[in-house]
Length: 188
Image 1 (cartoon, rainbow, N blue to C red):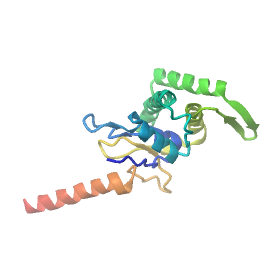
Image 2 (image 1 turned 60 degrees about the horizontal axis):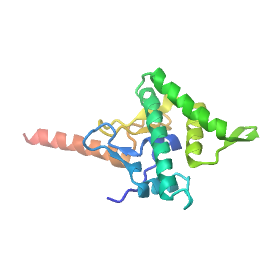
Image 3 (image 1 turned 90 degrees about the horizontal axis):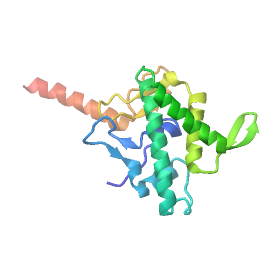
Image 4 (image 1 turned 120 degrees about the vertical axis):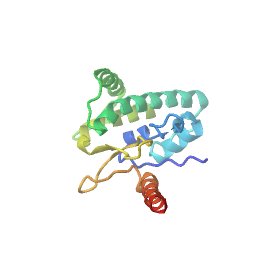
């Protein structure tokens, strides 16, 4: 099936985390960044349009490894927050190292507001992780209610009632399941 990136998280970091489909279902789990063609599609959709130089095989594999590492540590910290728990100290320490490394390599562009520029896509994503924790209201961080999905998103609804990563995807499946249960129970 042709991969079309779905940017439903509300932030680049969450969209990166969501490149694992069916994260909570071991047999259905799909790592969308495992394929370099999909990596290019995700980068382009995310506004990180890669140059041809970046996508040469050796560079692309290094970028792929860096983004997967960033994605997994971001998920390890964000998932507990999304479900009302606290992330582990070891995961926070790894996240701190990841961000500090990106800041060390970045150039300060402006002091008002404090703006950094990174030369590589991987470092731009790492800086985005830092900005996510600084700028976003983590009380609005949610995990999709579908038991197998595992995608994370920022609930920007007025009343904080968003339940699904995508109403058209996981939300529709849940509604169809409820409909089937209601009607199959009535005919039994």
